[in-house]
Length: 88
View 1: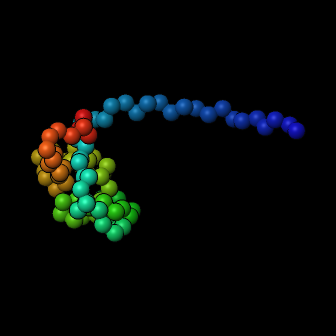
View 2: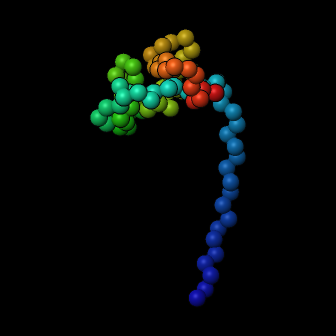
View 3: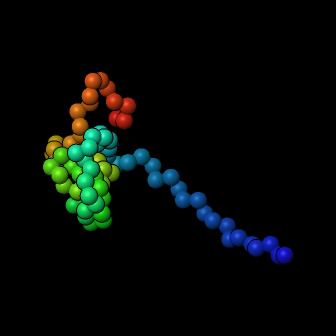
């Protein structure tokens, strides 16, 4: 049996820190889930829902919030009974 030669792969460079700080959303409660529907920001299906019942991916909502400071279209659930650990 002959050994198969592999082509060397290049490792991509680290993208570096994001340009704007991204605050993680806390969407752990049941109202943030529904039947799969097209995301309002990217168009692919997602089971997640915003507070306004818009279907969207959480990561896109977080990035949208970072690039639109001061707007409250996509907000986080308030912490229940104390601090949460999912905020940077």
